[in-house]
Image (cartoon, rainbow, N blue to C red; front, side, top):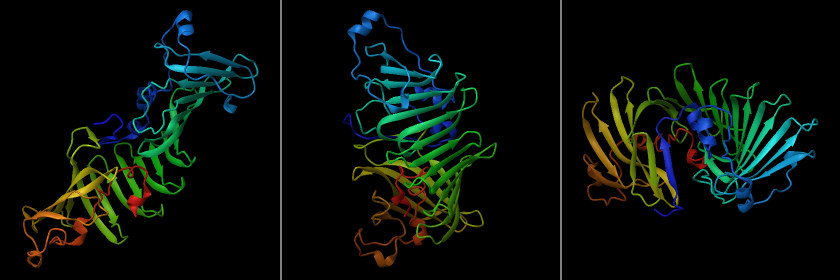
Length: 372
């Protein structure tokens, strides 16, 4: 795989802090809910003189107009280019610390810029950390939403993160994590309309996904059971069904642009009496410079849910393209002389719709068009 080829890492369970961004050494601190702690290796004055930073300090309104202390970095043992500290009126209590990290540090994988990662730490007059802001060199993907910068708020003692907001490059709010209420809310591209809300009832996590109006519940996913209740199909018709999901990979789904289609999950739909009605198998493929989910197999079960009465294998294609049948165990006799491109599967049309190819638990990489 080429060095710049896109790679996907998808976890089959995405709870709470595991959705939080991880960047350079901040990754571990955030995932376990700790405040920002930067550890720097000591360097000699001679080493600092021999290794100048790649970028020099520039004017920044965030620092204010008071005295500013600047510490130059650079060199193999210092992970920042420079660090600046501004102070309150007493010229002793730090107000803001700005850190420009080295370009060689490992940024988030999908960053589309070679610029510098910048961190801001805002302190209260009592010396406790109040807020921090992390600015990516370019818009990247974090918590499955487009993110240019992140703002985190801390508790009164500056120890624990109580809120995190992700913003896109156009300054619209993409997600909000409220730790006090154990909620993670994702917004559509306008920064106001709800896309989905993850909640916690003290035992289990649930995800409520909304239609494009941000008010009508589309489906609700129960993480503890890997089950989902749907209320509408993609055309907006009533579609009350329940299915369970089984992931077809262990813990992490890894895929590169040059890889062949890979199995992603199985969704098993039940009838009202609890018997198994049909099962879909979804694959992920790289088509037209994007990762998309495709319906690869469909198994239709008998009335008692015990045996397969029809199995259809499809060509891997995006869900917005017509399905092409490769094989079908119990085809419609009227299709016997048709070619694969024109054959119609011998099943009800609702069995061909997806919430797996459609049910990306946190949207399809912040793209609202997938929900139309």
